[in-house]
Length: 467
Ligand code: B12
Ligand code: SF4
Image (cartoon, rainbow, N blue to C red):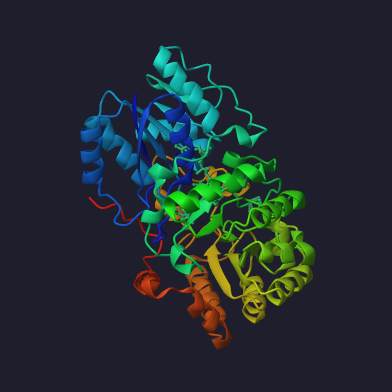
């Protein structure tokens, strides 16, 4: 069969290949299928007309698409348009939005199937069933449209050993073709790409939807296989830096240690950093020293708040004293340090937010990004919103972290004011500028200028799927 995979619509000016589709492409190829990937997060991203042309030319039997909640209205538009361009193709969606809301996904897009959770095994079984003509309704982790009804199959368990998954189809992802724009523009070395050494995170932060697709069990990859993949990425794609998407890279100390020791023993010279954030309380001097020796130069923490009450509400279970101590340790060992912060989580007052802003600004962190609290489908916090909206009428683009206004205690205007204040107070410290300027590559200046303009115009987070 011919299979076309389309990445999630671009929502920010952030350009990275759709790694999840790379994994699915490899599974499909192993069955002998011909696969193409269209990335909507490369530059220039194809327009709607461009996607339709590609579909006409390739004439796929299956069209798969990743859907995220904030860009779901674009996903609806893409799927509905492709239904008329390729009426006989099977349309299937996967990713965080279909995982959280499979019935609504099928109702609103008109697609045939939604894959719930981690994709590989369900996708493989579904492709086998399509080839043989078997009934797909018994397949675990699959939702199927049957006329006006939606049938949701049994729950799919996560695979215990993630080493059974083939490497992503890097030749289709072409990581070297992405521009040196954010986050690539903030790398020590380029080209860079994202990469997984483990899946899953046992923590239960209330705002996080990630362990619905990646599991609550930490599942490390064999570090020898990881090293083989890195060597191939260096040789075939010239990759010089990795952004690890592991949800909680240091959760199992022995995995983080094995990864570093394998890189060092095999003499793999690569710069890297955990991109998705990890818990700051898990690190200590011995592990950080090893990370540094093995090429890690930046630590991106998910601190989210300095206020003890807010930390409790979002189930972060961190101690503000420990946070400060670990940031100082990371700085002393020579890391660039960064953190994400959430503003406006349930019950949060202006006073509490100001406390976080003050503590973050005076901390030695090099970078800080402040986002509005957003109850995403798949996260525990979704409970705050799900009964207040009608999914088929909801403007999903309002679920973006920059413009969201779901706080029960702070108005939209106050939230916007606080987010601006946080960034200004954090970055108006001249001691932070040299580090920032050291990381922004000259060729990336124009992308950062675009980013800054979006921010000034207040259009950050708006959707750009061209007609
Ligand atoms: C890397 C990442 C990014 C990168 C995306 C780069 C890219 N092009 O892939 C960047 C930094 C740009 C980013 C931005 C955003 N992200 Co993001 N991101 C992630 C992160 C950390 C990892 C995603 C990933 O690649 N995982 C590894 C691969 C292997 O897993 P996967 O993509 O989930 O794919 C698997 C399954 O989902 C499934 N699957 C996925 N697609 C499909 C398609 C088909 C057809 C099938 C069958 C199966 C399937 O099978 C795959 C293999 O198992 C996740 C957290 C997480 N780990 O899930 C958040 C996450 C996906 N992001 C999220 C969000 C909200 C965003 C933003 C919208 C935030 C914003 N500012 O508003 C933006 C917009 C993105 C955009 N499209 O422009 C949310 C999504 C929640 C939701 N309900 O939609 C997540 C879950 C984090 C969270 N808050 O909990 N993100
Ligand atoms: S935010 Fe990070 S630590 Fe918390 S549950 Fe999600 S992946 Fe785990």
